[in-house]
Each structure stands twice: as structure tokens, then as C-alpha cells.
Length: 541
Image 1 (cartoon, rainbow, N blue to C red):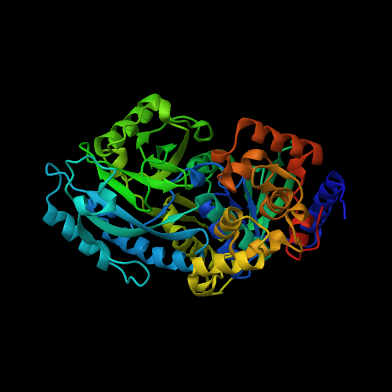
Image 2: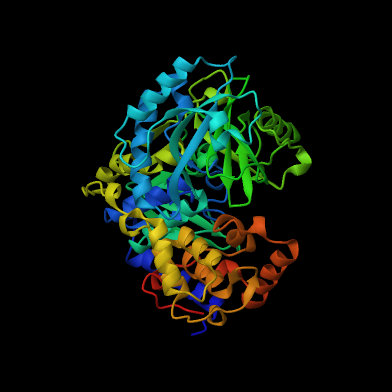
């Protein structure tokens, strides 16, 4: 069935406005579509709260898609005596590995040892603590290795003789955000992207909120409570939108990464200790590349305009060259990522030593409508943060439902026994006509939801036109219909990393395809009628 997208956009806005005025008041409005906002919306919807999440850009467009792609306890935080944060993160590492084995997986790290750095006994003690601070069932423990007898020693300079191995996990960070938003919607939350909260005022027990969409149209909604999960814009929301202020302060720190052609041919990652006491990671990335990062630089500009600077590129190249035989220069950098970390200001002396823990602030006075603001946090602890945020605000919304997310899979994560290899094998047997490389990518991106993407297709032709190499119409339509994608960047950078494998001409073809098929891509999923019908599978184009 072919829908007139603009008609349905207008219809749904009118319907939504009518419902808001006469029938429905949201229990909770969540501001921000990064990992914390999406996680909070999911948790709240699962407890039976009516939820509206508003994101002014795309889901995970900023900080949450510019991470080092790790689910980890934070080995270096032990040096700052943040044992509670590390313990909490290690617990979450196990929970998240089980919840989304398609987009989160084990990763073994190698730490080469240099004699001028921390003594080996201290590293062993730190790794022992890292292994035992929290219960560990999935990942193997740490060990000492002789680099000259281990394949991970081959890419390193010959001066490195001894090293240590330990385990953490990798994640497709932007997909983690999308899957949380998807789960929230399937539990009846409404997710609006390209929708900015421009004003919010308390009137007794309600928040009256004005929203502005990408067409400049303004819509008013009502909510009993608000969660400010705007990341680097938390202070802006407090000062300019809710006009409530806060005793807490944010510290904005820029973290940048570079991507170069693959520097090693094995599945391990490296953690490097540097003379300035910082660490960087070198991680196998998207099969053909190595991701190197991150930096820690104080940032004062617009978080939406953050970019890597030349000094950061040179720094990361120098740190890589200190360890690897294969030397790299700025001209070898294929792509970069920069994001602004909204860290809780603990008055630390350096950006690198600022805590990665979080703080939640509840503003609730004289029975007025509550507001919770999120300060700080990191990718690994998002689920726990969301749980605590809803624990804090739910009683003021008359909700007494208990915690539920710890044992629940994210969409597509219900892989039998968490065995991705066996799942991929079964998918290859079921769809022998799909090239193996595509099936592997589908499995590691969509998990069991790949069956929904493929639908009733029996051949590649039935997946539609191959718009760009390995990118068929069926996948593009799935991302638009189900995952809020609207632009080429949404599709080939945040929902996937296909951009790294495509030529400029391929990207131009995708942009042309979107322009031809959708006169207003922003109208596709940014309305409530569309979002509701998608959960029942009733909409197709």
C-alpha cells in the first residue's frame, strides 16, 4: 500500500493534538535521544508509563555514536580509586552481553608493557581486582603473555617483550541507542526525532511543553514529569527551556578517534599506556580498519559542531607509532569521529581524570510537576542509570511498577544460547541465496529481526534494487519504516558503518534514491500514527 506521507503527517499531528487536549496527558516526557534518553524511555514504557521522547536531531547523532565502542568496566578508573563505578560497570557488562549478543560481543585486549611505566606487579594487582570486583561468567580472566610467542606481538615494535591480556566487550553504539528506542516504542512509547523541545513551563502538577519539528511547526503537549537527558545540552535545557537551574555543573570534554586501514590481522584489541599517563585503544573495526582513540580535550564550543583538530590527529598517530611497527601519518586517516562527553564536574585537575560516573538530580517542590536531570554517565552504565532515574521519578507519577530491564533482551537479541556463530550458520542455511558477507552483517546488526527485514523474499531481486554495494532497497525501507532513518547519513553511518566501504558515487546514488522516493524524508516516521502502526506491522511502502 502506498501512503501519501505528507497527508499522514498532517493527519497524525491533528489527531495527536486532539488526543492531547481531550484524552491524553503523557506521564513522562524524555528530552534527548542519546543512549541515556533512549534507555530511560524504554525503562519507563516497560513500567506502564505513557512516554514521549523528543530528539532534536537523529537518534545517537552526537555523543552516543562517537564513543570508543566499548562496554567495559574501565580499567584505568581503578587508578582514580573509582571502585564503585568499576564494579557497577563490570556488572552491567555481563547484563548487556546477554541482552544484545548481536551488537555486543567479547573482545580480548592486549596491554604491552614498557619498563619505564607502571611495574608489572602493580598491573597484575589491578587486573586481579578487575577480574574479581564483580561476578564474571561470560568472559575469561586476565593473564600474562610473552609477546614474542604470541600473534599479538607481531605488529608491535620488537622492544615490547611482555604484555597482559584481559577481556571486555565491544558494541555498535548507535545501534544500541536505536534498539532501546525501538523497544520503548514496542512498549507504546512515542519517539519523535527531528523534534526540539523549545519551551517547558510548570503549571501545578503538569508540564506544558512546546515542540518544534524540522518543518518549523510548533506543537504543544502536556506531561506529568520530565527527564532532561540532553547530554551536552543538559545545562541549556535547564537554563533556557525549563528555566529551573541546577546546583550541578557539567564539564564538556571532547573525545576524538581516527580510523585507518587495518594495522593487524587478528581479532585482539590493544590498550596502550602513554607517557602522559593517558591510555588509547587500537581496536579492530569493521573488518578492514583499525579504530584508534580517544583524546580528552576541554571543550567550550557548540556540542553539535564538534570536530577533531589537527593536534588530536597528530597525537593519536604518535601514540600508535610508539607501539606499532607500521607507522601512520595524518594523511593515512580515512575517517574521524568526535563527540562531546557531558561529564559530571567533580573539579578534577585534568579532563582525563574527570569521573565517568553520573549524578541524578530531582527537582520536585510543593507537589509541582517533577523534573529529573542527568549529569554525566557512560555508555556501559546507561541501563543502570535509566533504572535509577525511573526509580526516582516514578513515585511522583503514581507508578509503583518494579525494575524489569535486567533480564530482558533488546530487539533482535533473543539469540539461542547467545551463540552468534550458530545463529549465522542457521541464517545462511535458511537464506542460501544471500551472499555470506551480507548475512553476517544482517545478523550482527539486526539479530533475529533480520527475518523481518528479509520478509517473504526468495531471491536478491526480491530485496529490490541494490542502491549501493550490498545495500538493497529492503534494508533501506526497513531502516526508514522501523528505525527512524531519514537521511543517507542515518543509514550508512549511524544505522550501519557502510560509509567506510562505499565510494562517493555510491553515497550519491543513495541520496538520489531517497530524493526520488521521498519528497520529505523527515515526514516518514516522525508522527504517532506511523509509529503506532509500525509496531503491528501494518505499514508498508
